[in-house]
Length: 113
Image (tube, rainbow, N blue to C red; front, side):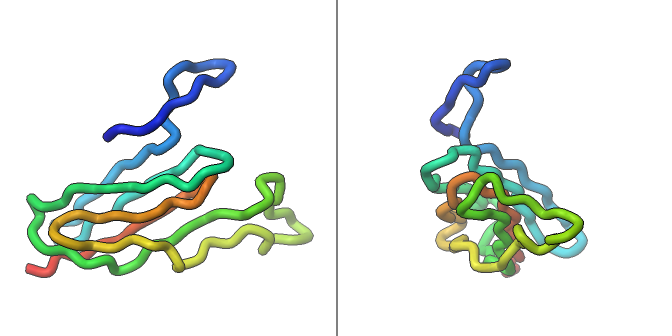
């Protein structure tokens, strides 16, 4: 995977975009976990899944908030909630999605075979 990088006070060459995937053979599902660390720009995620054959997006869950200082608290536990309005699309064995700035994403896919 390629991604633009940044330097932090502790590390150099930190990728803005990080993703890992899990394959559940029993269910015929693939789950992609992705984070966009960029604080001001969305980033496109592209995943090549052609080796699995045709797939379809079941769900794209996103955790994000416009105000990066907003947090869930005991008094306000619902300030930041996940939603299922992600943009993931499966086409020709590839998954693409625009990941919002500073967002955490879970994309669930089902094999069509």
